[in-house]
Image 1 (cartoon, helix red, strand yellow):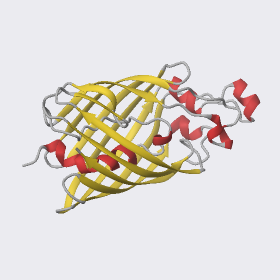
Image 2: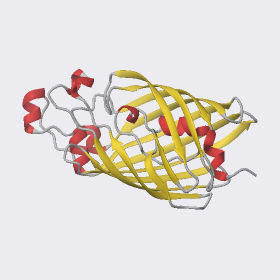
Image 3: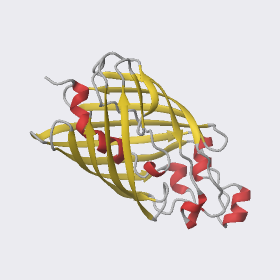
Image 4: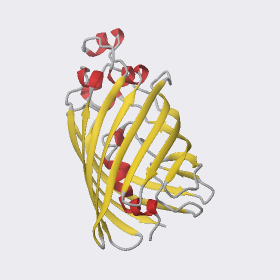
Length: 268
């Protein structure tokens, strides 16, 4: 029988992108997904994906990007890459993954959309993160991560929780489904959804203070075709809905967005 974590390896493109769109354009790293190798072994995944999302979280303007993917993990538990950041998995269990890592909050540029003019840029910031994942032999997986350091003051805190299931439809086809939610503190919410008095004067938006709470909920479905034991292609669709103060923000032009991913991955 294959290693339980390996069962999810063909889902790498769907998992890494479908659950984070449109975060692929802003905040990513919602979960650690180590599918390149079993514990005690080294391996990686490379490829690319065409991601159709929005200009920013809450935008009603569409944006399409070609996103490169490259992730590698070493036998001693260390990993580095585009989707996971740099960190270490401290677990030797095939079911559990937990550890620490360093990632980036990519911020937001006001030039990205006319709707952001006058709000100023949100700088790229390094985030410290801890994570814990659990996978069952039956195809269920659960993920959790905490990240601290977003926003211009570097005080934003974000917690991402997710769960999903992967099943084999045929020898070369797999279907995956997942759900997730993100909670954030007031500093993160104010940076991305709030409007200060100064920003209000420059942008024309009403002043708005965003508090802590659930930022958004997500659901996705992905179909993966295994071309061979190393090469796979994935088509995924993701729906994300803003909640709470994020939904009530004047920047939220659209509460719910549907995004898509078409990607190819190669394991080595």
